[in-house]
Image (cartoon, rainbow, N blue to C red; front, top):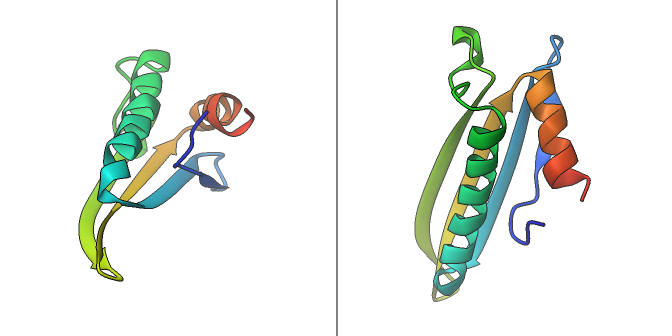
Length: 101
């Protein structure tokens, strides 16, 4: 179960989906967020091995991670965003593993 990443998902007309999560945490918790991102990406790579590539290039799934740190109310916080795109099959497997828990 994920404690920091809460995914929103959307679907296009072909059934391909986008799954996005963002976490903004104090720096001491940044490692836990990174561990969750790694957990999701490790699952994707193990469940759909060798299929990570842009969907328009024949991939089953792809991802983008963005991170930055900034002071908020005098405290340094890290914001991490994980965006996944995937085929209908990938998104359904993802929902069963991470959203239906």
